[in-house]
Length: 404
Length: 227
Image 1 (cartoon, one colour):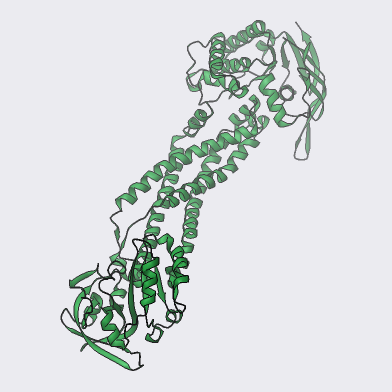
Image 2 (spheres, one colour):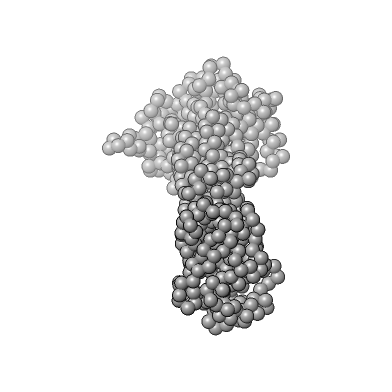
């Protein structure tokens, strides 16, 4: 009967109850939808960063991380390859690369770029290379003069498939080396900056350009489970040649990793901000409901109800209001996320979104953790703010109530 | 056997810097089965005395004993338990909970007492029949007249089998015919169940029904007559 009484009490003034329910519904919906969009953006940033050449783990010389020049190369990658073959779990992918700075030029333009020498057989599936080609073909193994460039770079150089592009960089002899390549393919990446930055040639061609035999600058690894990256680093690290280090993506992308570390706190902060706006309505409604029933609480106390039970009754009404609001708000949130599951096209904000490393399409991502956080914030803090009107009801004395 | 005893009870209210003496030293005894009225003009201290006997307020001085237990100085929690088990209240107005039906209102006190659901329902219906509300179990207060609402309040006060029922001007908001019907019903409950009633009133009709009239003036008992 206590629950029945609480339920009937909240519907004494349906208009007021509907108003506060609307506030809770909108609050829960906003928390879930905007939380899902934020997480989608964050995952887009992470995915873009990992897919643009970072991978999950890189193995390189310690000096290479700070100074990406050919001098800091791995001269003999054979022992490294042996370690990777032996220690990586099934489903892992790895490849060797040369990645150095350089200049690309043709008759119309010249720009600073990053020359990426790849193993055309191993690279697809590790970086975006292989999935993003829109024109031409991928590189053949040991192809000597083929190059794959980004669409934005091609546009900037006013060039196209089959045309020549000259790459220039510092060789291992510290002399400037240059070589002409023929454009075999053009790719489209999520970010225009990526298209302008990276050009792909075969590992063999890169070694020839730099004047190194068999050397590489790094190995890039993708493991089946991104959550086990740290464990894999611990496994591989001790087996590597002494002059090499295994770096997880968290160390390769410290800024992004720092942002991700703060992301849950930002989400919680967002929930609390939304809740604070909602709390004013909630506490006001509950306070009005209590003050309107001053005589009734006095009567209940006169009949022998203890203050703690009166406080409990008001809190029960609060929980019911919140539970109904959360139920509807969650359903609306799920429906909105489902409706937007195809992604939101942010092309019109492309330059702004690129600045943050996000793609053009944001797909909302709703996690169980975010759902629990949002609901817990509303329920727990909702109860806390309802304590004020509940305690006020508990303090009403029968004598004062009867003269109210 | 006395069910209520008050000894030199005083009550002083503080309104800002002004002290108002509502009771100036009252000593009365109410016997089990009495049907007594506290009469007197407005401000004489009737309601104050009733509130003190009911443990709704604390006296400034003096002692009050209810059913053999001194209630003066008890904690709020103990007073609440005492009210729940020993006292039934009927107020002048706003007696019943608007969102509960007549039967649910009557059951509510038994619910707080921990009476099982089936017994609650049986006892509530029986007492509603006795106060003349057969067939109105499911009606909400808004669907009942003022007199019927007061009958529900009396039924709720009696159903918990209290030692005493305190009624603060129960007929004040009723027309004379309805008020008379309510008084007849309460007198019948007094005879049938032996429930002790104390009223506060300045309604002569109530005084006519009372078996004992304690007349108060300026916070003092000026007469105490039994019929």
